[in-house]
Length: 532
Image 1: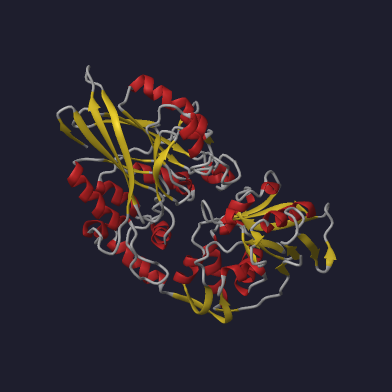
Image 2: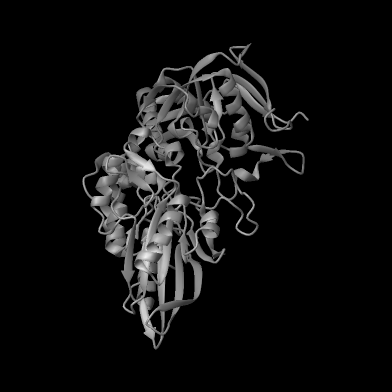
């Protein structure tokens, strides 16, 4: 980061985001090698650093959760988190906490941060018990290159985390609006530090179309990247994430990068400077690009070695059989699974109902990559279907609440140009959100998606009797949904009857282990139609 040539100099900012614990280039469903992971990115990082000499290296969050490797580590926790080991070895300059950093609670997050040889930056997350000071120490850092270029890096995290996270995991924290936080800190840093380059690393994405500025999603405040580009003067570079998109372009005069997820791309921002009279550096031009680790990029052996023992133990654990299924519980088509009751989703809801002791449940197919179960079931099968560490919450809801939730879930569908039922594009772009479609057990319902939005629930009963709006029911769902995640506002503020703090994968594995054999079954209590 330097390479001064007369009155000119260049610096590079290398960026990772949403790695989600992918270190090895491994598909944990099949054990096949794929073009992803920190080990491959490490090879590219080292190569870029040799060319540019000491570039800034920043991680933009969601680094400690997401793979079976992380799940296995959390069962033991005997040493430094493997992702942090790698970031330490590669000499990261800073990281920003993402929303998934909070999935395991503050004790684990504090431990991760204590083991890090770099600061974690987040200006908008405050400690309620410490005069509302930044909870993680430094809101920003300043680095000076060999050429004397002064670079400030401000960390900001989406403030929408309380809508998803288990309240126990974020107890004592205050989440300030991320946009307002940027508006507060950017001019403060500009005035106080007078940097030559100001970088905002924001674990959040874009709420609007990047070219038209039209809303691309409901404007909840979860993603505010577009507003930051347009409303916060003084930002030179905006690092983004959270949405798992691939973005490298200029928006509103700000150079923007977002390098996907799981280590499938490395973000690179190159900034060229001229030295003005008086010694001040001025930006001449900026360039953002994404570097992809294809099959020609070998994984860094030193990084692989850091996680070798844990990876081997994880793979052995994943291959352990825990039971078997009689019948077919596979997902042959994600769309078909969401159009009518399915044995796999019925199984998921039955597990939730038994764990919570209630008779009504909703659950979602978390990924279109989920394949369900067939034949022998291993831990690999469980963890690849239940990749998020969601816990369960029981809410007391009225019939009106449940009907509103069904109307919200019905928004997932549209009628395509061929007259067939199709997925609403809003659930695909800018970020895939298939997990925001729920399927219910314990009630009977029919959704007619040819009808107008908000009027699609055409049958709604329990045990054959129409449900009244004022009836009350206890309903189990995952904690993300219970907090209103996915625009299920009707759940916000509703009485919490019970919380089950074991995560979904653990509950499913225990359910199978107790029975040894589970049977695929389906009571066909719901369906989606387009009657016209």
